Image (cartoon, rainbow over all chains, first blue to last red; front, side):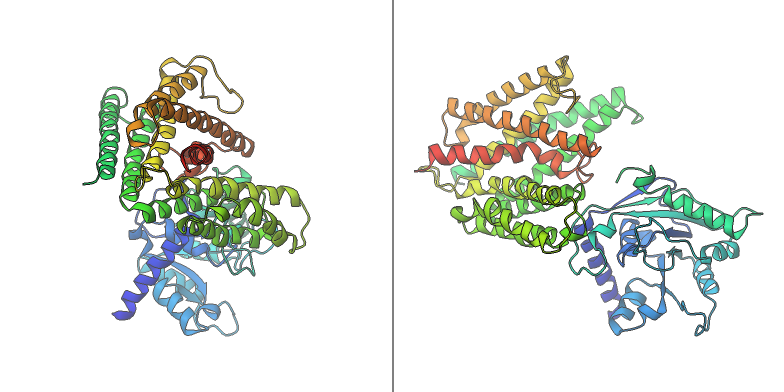
Length: 215
Length: 315
């Protein structure tokens, strides 16, 4: 009980801090923020990515939206475990195929069945290159295949890489935006390669450098 | 109740009455011309009026909070403005420490200097110390690409968003004989004149505007709006002489300077927006845009107003 209230409090503090630094604004370009199960998939440049998406969601949606994250990172220390499990309620998956006991796709699909929405970073790791996106991993496709009725929403996070470049300790206050695109579904005959290419293109199209809405 | 509080209440009451009338006009216009929310001009007008209510209430609370309230309010405005400005600069990785120190060292120190009333230092802290130290911090990172552009942008951001804006609360530090304890009203005078000038230019422009005054910078500004707005805000300023240490004529002349500086400040900031290809600096104030969109004219008039008053009215 105490732990739960503390987690709520920390969650609110994190959201307020994110607003203070980034004045983040959600742009609902392709969908409306309605309470149904969805898979949000976003570009990944910083540890704050998930927090920004979480911050712009209306609070009813926020409580049911869970990030998918690597258990190797989030179970490392008691503090990370508290933030990852209790505050963010992350769906933790083992990224290492050698050691894992549960199928990550199965774990994610069960979370969706329980009524949660998921936030997924299909690049698999933080993008520290100059390219706007790294090639997607196949997880998004397999998850979409196993739960075909669920909408997959591309979400572009803009400017956060300038707020907190890798290796810097102090964030710089700069305005960020989070743009939600139109939902995707896997077509009946669509191959894995085709779908992944389509998902990458849909996400890239939301970036301001590629003609998306202004930042 | 002291004379100061009475004057402040009179002013806030007057502004409240004007907003009340504006709200009613906005409501009637919406019922008549935009019942389904389809007329963008009317919808924007009403969003602006609503935001004005919020801004006036916030300012009123800050004024009642006295020195602490005013300094905190403008420190926050500076922070929000600098955040908008820095977003549009070409700064990169190598400017990280320079920018971080602008936000978390220079800005707090500037407002702290105003808080402790150290005129000798707050008036040179950014133009001298920050001016010389920030490029050093940037140079130490060793990235020379676009160096002058990046350094100049950071410097300009600090001058506009922090140094110039901080001259509004700095008005509290002026010791004007016979005006002790009433300096908050000087801020109220400046803000009312500059903002009413913006609003009156908009109104005159919408009613009688024909000739564009700066088509390349700000296509919505007209000569008729400019002349009508500046003259009527000058008259308004003169009529507010009772809350200032000035005579009727002096108050009118100072209001003229304030309105002119505000107008040109708006043009300068428009030039930057045009160059960067944006319409507004931000989205935090519904209907108005960002903090800089609302503050640009204040920022340009505050330092001049401060120094004119300091030169002629303090011993």
